[in-house]
Length: 136
Picture 1: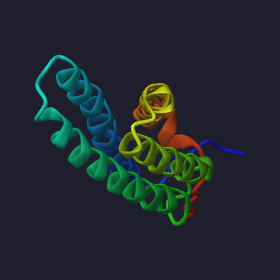
Picture 2: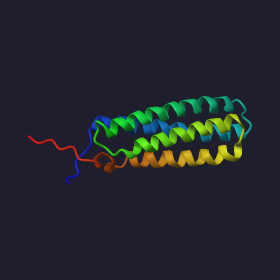
Picture 3: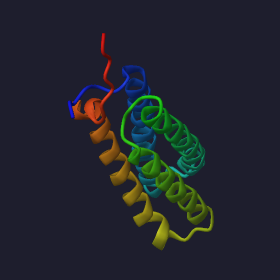
């Protein structure tokens, strides 16, 4: 089976959304650190950024669906996006409940997984995961 590229617009969309998700996730860590350093207004920004991160995770699911169908890419990023959204929903709940013993390590896990997805999305091989043949 030849190794051809996926539809470029779906890969561009997926990469853009994953990049936004990674930036927002890293921003969460910065805002949490700022709050812990005594800048207490950063907690409100941390909560606002959590909402933006969750909404972007939904957009990532949509972008992953488009990457898969009609894009011709792999389907696993859809499942990973759903898992990420579930983790972020739990993360938000643990944050508001002030269960820091879960909130902090889950936040680290979310950032690691988001950065792994970011790294995969920007690999050149991400654009050649599945065959789309066009015969003339």
